[in-house]
Image (cartoon, rainbow, N blue to C red; front, side, top):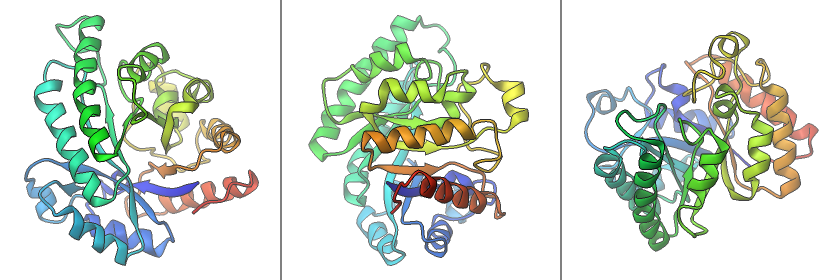
Length: 288
């Protein structure tokens, strides 16, 4: 399996994307995931945001990343597609991201729904909106040989019955799932059961633990968390993560395990990295 991280880890540290590349090089991590920005942001322009704008040339960026020994595992274009503005705002954003990803060397683009049930819509109406959206998205993804992942992160995607329907929106090998150990747990699901149901569709994995206090206050009441605010192994989801790693190994998974853990220029992400390496060694999982 490949070892990577999401640059969300350094949002609160106000790092630039290049500083994240430097961290990856220093910690012998060769795969990275970042959010994509469609437009101009002063925070990003001043170097205080660890994501990448679509106006940046993808080939030149790919060459810069190669100099650090780092490549994309996925780019994040997870604008919620379940609401009425999904087709108007989310779909064009994802379509641009797919074409950009193909040039940047990213094999996957991440997508999702909204955290809450969209106001003014029924579940059936929202699902119909997303089905039309994913049909348009996958047509472009197939043309560029890019995998579009659906991440469990919202009202629909953290419920197995809806995720199953969404993964069947389009009959295509380019529509797959980004497993998330933290989001499934905080939504009240059993991450191991969630993974077991969809393991044939998994092409990318977000690894995050959940602190005991957050689980006590929010489990079953939230559908997603941006990053873990405790190190991997220190939370109540650690055993589930270890079980999921073993399941992935037995299934022959060779994709990326992407850390989503608060970095904040402190030791938490380094501790998470050490835990994941140690647990993988216990399970005899070779990490790249």
